[in-house]
Image 1 (cartoon, helix red, strand yellow):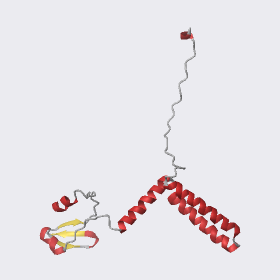
Image 2 (cartoon, rainbow, N blue to C red):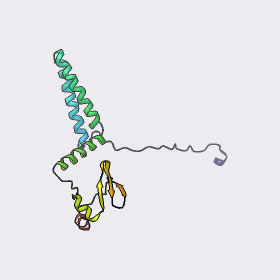
Image 3 (cartoon, one colour):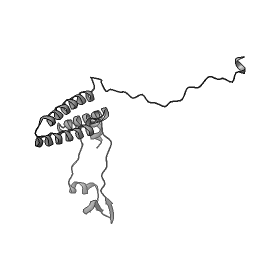
Image 4 (tube, rainbow, N blue to C red):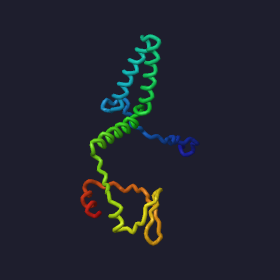
Length: 156
C-alpha cells in the first residue's frame, strides 16, 4: 500500500556553507588580547571625554578618533592582526640584517672585457659595438635558499 501513496520523503536542502574558524574569544589568539586592550583604552578615553573641560574634550575625542582608525586599519580582524604582525617581524629582521640579498658590483671597464659596450646613454639605453642597442631592465629573480646559496654563488 505504501507504493500507491503519492507521498515521498522530502529531500534536504542543499546548502553551501563554509565553517570559518572563529577565534574571537580564544585567549591564545593575539587578536583577542589586542581587542581587549583596545576596549580598555577606548573606555579610558571616553571617561576622559566625559570628565574633562571643553577644550580637553576635543583633544581626547581626536585621540579616540585616531585610535579607532588605526585599530580598524590594522587590528579589526584576525587576518589583519596576523598580517601586521608578519610585517613588523619582517621589518625588525630586515633591520637586523637577516635578509640576504646578493649584489655584484663591477666597473664599466670590467664589463667591457666581456661585453662590447660602447656607451651607456640616459634612460637605460646601452650602445654596443656593431651599431647594436639594448635597454637595461630590472628583473626579480627567484629567492635562493640558504642551503644552496654556496653552490649558486660558485656557479656565478
